[in-house]
Length: 280
Picture 1 (spheres, rainbow, N blue to C red):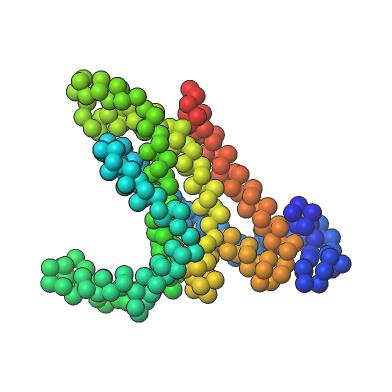
Picture 2 (cartoon, rainbow, N blue to C red; picture 1 turned 90 degrees about the vertical axis):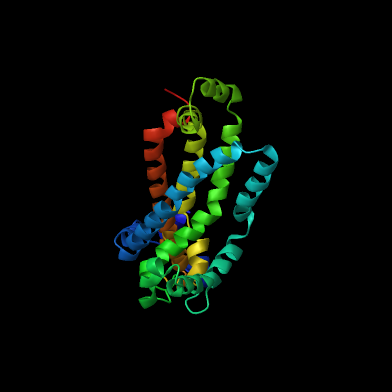
């Protein structure tokens, strides 16, 4: 891949078409405004989908671990199902739900806007419906982020549930005897002992969300509806390689993305790694 990034190469023309160009692919990529736009899109969607994953998964896991074991296993399985379901299938289902003219989301919002009991809250939507959830640049990031959040919140819930299961229950009983309520037990017992699991889960989220490809690609029909706001850097990388057949530039963009992910992960490790891994 490093060797390829210093060459121009169209695979259709064979290996004989490969030509050495030095750092030209890197220079062109770094001055390409589309690269920075797609990187910004990726960062926005990574934050919009990643932060809620952990803010919801953590208390949800605590709630599940406090429930009866039989019900906990059923609910954990239910929340984990989206993660093991095909990403393409999930994205296609949401694409249908997000449909501007026949999607169930716009239909529900239209009903709520017209119904007497809910019109005071949703009535203002009548003038803007139907919404183009995956067609309009102002909404597409939120739509993609919601699908990513829905798919991976269960995965993080399972991580935190496993972490909470390792905590000695005697600690909770002792805290209860001392008069600690549920929030205080979560704040002073569960949360500190979960730091290694939080560090592991957030690290996976950073790496995974920076490589986001399937959900935006399917929801925007291969980028047709994502000319500015919905295209991630991985989608742009695919376009360079397999639509424009410019493998040298694609290799250079791959290394740029690799370095960016490395920087984000290193910064996170620098600030939270010691505590996250249980050190002082």
